[in-house]
Amino acid sequence: MTTISLEIDSDVAKAFQLSEPEQQQKIQILINQWMKEAINISKLQTTMDKLSDEAEANGLTPEILESILNE
Image 1: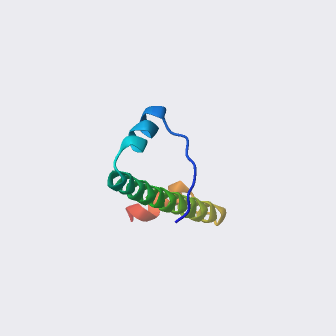
Image 2: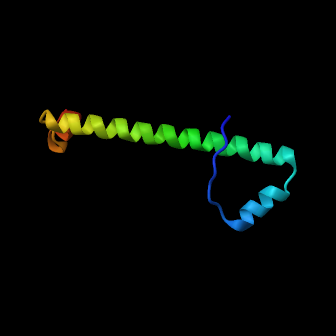
Image 3: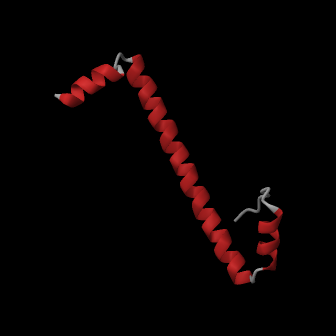
C-alpha cells in the first residue's frame, strides 16, 4: 500500500482521527475500493469515447447507427 494525501472537510478528518483503528481500517478499505471503481469507470468512458471517435472518423454517424439499430 502507498500513502497519499487528500484534502477533506475538517469535521471528517477529526471524526476519522478520533475513530478506533479498526474503523479507520474499514474506511480506508472502502475508499480504496471506491477509487478503484472510479478509475475503472474513467477508463471505460475513455475507451467508449475513443471507439465513438473512431466510428465517426470511419463515417458512422449517429443517424446511420440509429438506422442500423432499427433494422
